[in-house]
Length: 265
Length: 287
Image (cartoon, rainbow over all chains, first blue to last red; front, side, top):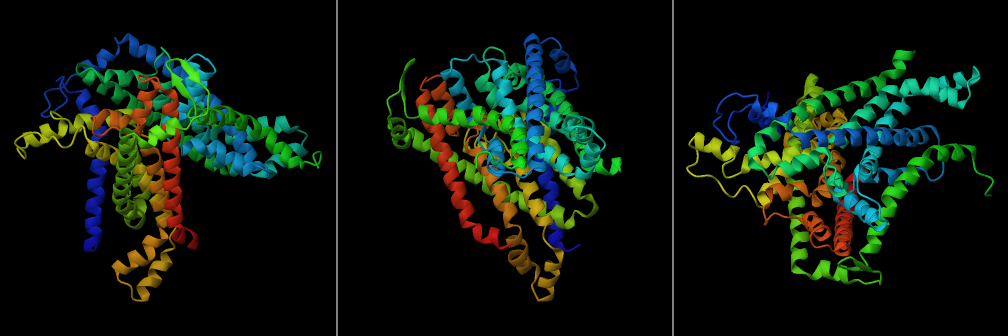
């Protein structure tokens, strides 16, 4: 190994430590006995995790977040499937420009999306509640769903579809009994990614919730109380584990979606 | 002509119309409404719908907004620069020396970013604070005698936290562009007498330019409008334009000004991004 490669390797490992530093603090200090987040560590405890069981407002926020995440991931995925099917199967006028527009939230600062949605809701005199957050999150999830579904649909062999039509299925039957099962892993991946995005999203939820808070908005409020810090760290640890599981599952389904052709033929 | 629509166009639009209409209603309409509102004025709860440029004049001439715009841009550009600078050698290492373990390295890099953005940014406050993790650790090791104070509640803290938070968004695109480089080009350059230094600057770097430009835009655009990080670790000297937009909306009750500030930030970001792409077009088009 040349000397420059050795330096490069040292750099890569150091950088990796920098990238892990904050995330490693979560489990470290959520089991630490002291209320103050500082070194040296003072002993092992599971108190902070037990605390989570008795926070009424936390449970309420969790319930709200689950409602929002489930609804927006389903809505976003349905819209994503429609858009992506159109994009991968047909070639038509206005396709590129309208798709680019639908994908725009990927490159817009979230605060702009949040402010714009809030302005419309206020101007129309609509109430701010969990459903306004669901709509906002659906808008954010849709581009991700399209990107995931595009790879699932583009692996689809058009001859399978033709075979089904030749064998007497109508278009709906073909979609329901041939295409849908083949892209199902992609749909699962999109649902899981959407769910995770929504569960973590703060800015839009912060702008658009009325009195019902979501989990990130609840966590934001907890930051003001130094005494509650270790409990918040414990909550963060739990959320990290949940995200890890959800995203590993989504990765598993995404790979299956990419390989679905091989498993059928 | 009207009746002569291709069947494929009809089928395509039958599928695409629902998501498209959804995006019109939830994105185009709100952005248009925001643009309209920025030309109006609000006095407490009464909205005056006469066209005026006053909000924009205020946004661009009041020192406080000028300061916030320039600070947001300065922070965001610094973050973009350092993130790409740090990410490049990492992506290079994985692509050229990752061997069998490329996928594992990429996986390792993304794991810490599966924690929520909110918590990660908050953890930087815990790390950089006066009695924080870093200071208590350094004191414990007796490397310093009193806590460092220049690292929290200022622009430095915002830069550190954002440089960390956006790292994978730089590493991944640069890695992809490095992977695309035909390795035989490197052999050719070596055979023609290029040393490692020339090889990197004359072959590898120009060929990976699309990844670098992409990474820079992916980081620059959203960080200008970041709200969470400056609010948590920025103190008063590190606040950015998004924090002011939120204040104008809620406490100051001046939605039209908030709209004008939002539209202005969007325009500034778009302008800089377009100039950046045009400047780099030479590299992007050649390959």
